[in-house]
Length: 297
Image: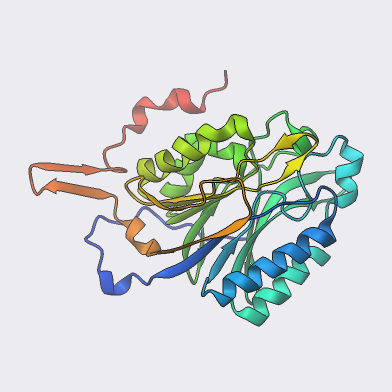
């Protein structure tokens, strides 16, 4: 991963609305052609231009948007994998520079030797800010062959706010979102490839992760079909209380747009009745009871 400074849990305070800039984000729910990076990048560039023209400052693409996901062999997948500074990311980076926007790109990342990763990279107009390698791998698609990322699970600063990235199956592990939240993430980004069996993730997981940690949580899924497996779309953004801010509740290509104030996620205290009914998502935890969570089974 690229270098990311650590930010401690912020002190409890009432957010100053004047200090919480609004950003416009876009989630690109797109079809992806397996093993055809040039086709996919062309689609991504077209969507990026459309989203930027609609005022989006951050454009998020699905998991493995450059490569596709349903590879049947390590060899076939490795042939498509590229380094972070490879031609596909460079093409999208150039467009980000021209448009003055940020993007999250899902890809297969080539590394030293035969290793390759299911990764995403966060691009700024002047270059990559961070990358993330999927840490939890299901026995499914290309993840049967990729190397698991080693972390750390860390948030990172951007001019749009403090971000946290994870990928698809990572989202079902609440520890991932909690670790990113404890590191100060205000907006969590989940590029994903959800098939019909994962419909519960769209319906429940996104809202739960947002509510548990009082963060904004955006899951961007794909559509189309690979090897007989359809993908459900249902891209969704949830807010601090788990409420749905925006969604594409269908399996058709499209772009989700929403405006949020990421800095509002710094406040973890909930005041229902002052001095009588108050909770704090972080201060009320009992880490002394949670040792089993990190113990091997």
